[in-house]
Length: 307
Image (tube, rainbow, N blue to C red; front, side):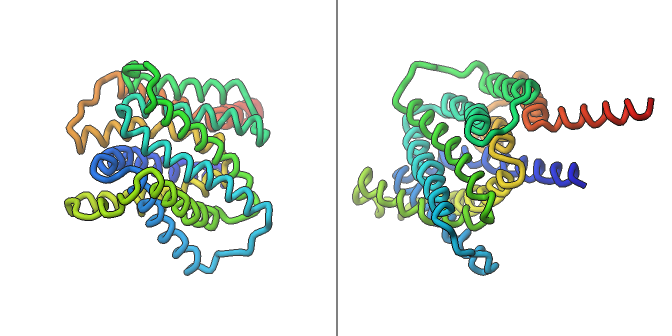
C-alpha cells in the first residue's frame, strides 16, 4: 500500500513537471509581450486569489503559530518574491538554453540543502541518481551553449538558489500545517511583494498590461491558474509527502518537457541526444528518489527468503 501511495505521488509530480515544462514556453512569450516584473506580480496574484479561494471554500484554513508564520514568510520571500523576480528578469537577458541548464542545478542544490538542514539520508545511490539526472539535462541541452557569465545567467542562478532554499522552509512548515494553506498564503503574500517591486522597477507599467492580443491573456491565465496555482498545490503537497530533496529531483524533467513544448508550439527540433538525455533523467530520478534502491533492496529480501 505504501509503495502504491509513493507511485501515485511520483505520478502527480511527473504531471506537474509536464505543466512546468510547458510553462517555460508560456513565460518566454509573456515576458516578451508584457513588462516582466509587473506581469509576474499579476500572474502570481491571480494564482494566489485562486488558491486562497479554494482553501477558504474548503474551510481548511487554520490558525497559525509564530513558527509556522516564520517558515511561511521565509518560504514566500525566497520561493515567490526572490525566485520569480530574478527568473523574470533573467529570462529577458539570457537565452532559454543557458537559463534551463542553470535551473537544472536546482535538484542537486535542494538535495544538498536537504541533507545539511533537514537530515535527509545521503546514500551513494541517491547521489548517483542526482548526478545521472544532471548529465541527462546536459544531453538535452546539447552541451549548454555560451557559458560566458552574463547578468542574465547570474539572475537565473540566484533564482535557482533561492527556490532551493524555499523548499527547505516549505518542508519545515508543512510538517505541522496543510500544504494547501501554505501554498495559498505564499502566493497571496508573495504577489503583494512582487507588486511593490514592480512599482519600483517598472513605474507606470500597469497600463502596458492592457491592449495585448487575446491569445496572450489566455496564455497568462493558463500559466497563472494551471501552472502556478495547481502546479504549486501539487508540488508542495509532494514536498510534504516525500520531502524536499526527493521532490526537487523531478525538476530535471522540466528541461525535456520545455523542449517538447518548444518543438510543438515554436517549431523547434528535437535531436536524438536529447531523447537519450530524457532516458538518462528517468534513470536518475529512479535512483535519486531512492525508488530503485528500495525496489532492489525489497527484491533482494524476497529472494533471500525464498532460498
